[in-house]
Image 1 (cartoon, rainbow, N blue to C red):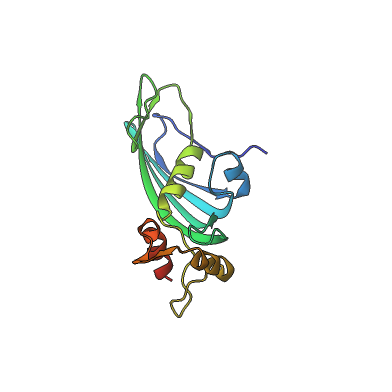
Image 2 (cartoon, rainbow, N blue to C red):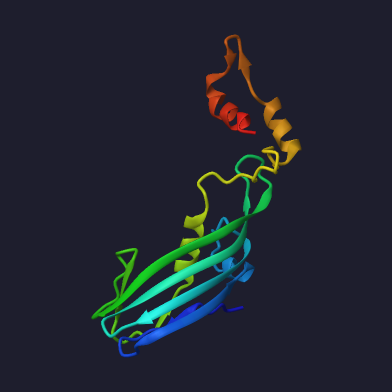
Length: 173
């Protein structure tokens, strides 16, 4: 199934336009190496075209299914991000600046698929763990947490220094 995430562009069309896109499992299937395999999101794209450039504001909201770094179970994580792109026109395409895209005068469409993908991933926290419940307790898989506790290695002086990072992780529960 082909997913269309393009918007019309052109230096000779001025005005304000709004586009909406649904992002789901089919979207993430387009990216074989994606750590996100499914999600349900909506992207709202506001486009303000002027004769010299186009400003694009992208708001993405919804949730994605990701793996927990602690217990490895999957969970739904909310996504709520806003990003901005500037499109200008020139003789050849240039995307070396992450915020400014230069399109050739002949281009009439801009595919936002890669931008959506990157914005969603950049909105995720570095450390991805299940959220705590209302009482501040971990909602991670208790069986996996118990297995982690059993594999802590102790030496005569206490905890093996090689496992210090795991001990810190376990104490955050």
